[in-house]
Amino acid sequence: MSSSDIFISETIGTAVLILLGGGVCAAVTFKRSKAFNAGWVAIAFGWGFAVLTGAYIAAKSGAHLNPAVTIGVAIKGGIEWNQVPVYLGGEMLGAMIGAVLVWITYYGQFQAHLSDPEVLADHTGEEGLVDQSAAPSAGPVLGIFSTGPEIRNVVQNLATEIIATIVLVLSILTLGLSDNGKGVGVIGTLLVALVVTGIGLSLGGPTGYAINPVRDLGPRIVHALLPLKNKGGSDWGYAWIPVVGPLIGGAIAGGIYQVAFA
Image (cartoon, rainbow, N blue to C red; front, side):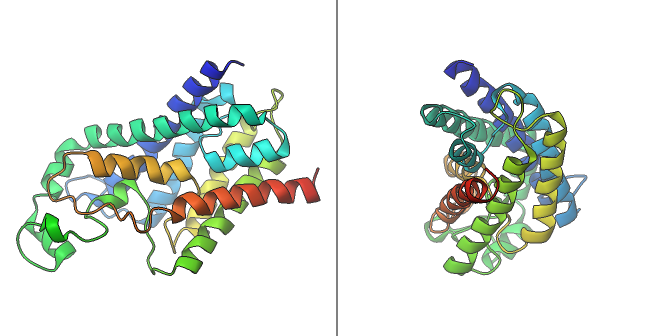
């Protein structure tokens, strides 16, 4: 498989992953959405189905959709290390495209939400518009794009992301690679989607379970760039944790596989 095949496959698959995953977050967040306040269970299942759909679309490249998975598979020996940058590039581009598509899909809801005095008052503690010069670290729509902790504790937040990502990547590696040696097979893809749902329900409470560097970083960059009035900050002080944590978790999972299962 050529580098262009890998790049295109991962870009499209990751874009669909983020479109559907970010889409369920938007659906639950916006008051003018039919799924408003559907809750955490809806989000967990929505992301599970997002993984399922994106992975089937990107089956040609092995459907990594996640740099942590790519690192784990490379350590296992499923791909060559010189292919890793190609996977990562496609995943990052796809994540950003998917985030833009969420914005387009919910354009009217974004406008209504960010001009609602009640929403802004809840977020700032004051009536009226958000003061952009003193915007909070996490804006009123940032949760649609990226993750954030319920309790800010660097050690705990990082550990949570590492542990959750180990569960994800180790499950992928032990499910077995497909015949082309680059990803899980058809049934494995369904099982991985269920694993992601389980991680969301069991381990997602503390940090929102990024478990994927580009899932968080790509949409966070889009949030920072989009012309959204009163959107607030992008919380860059936290942004390194959902990138570094999953990368460490993916590497540890690959190491565990080599020691325990290879």
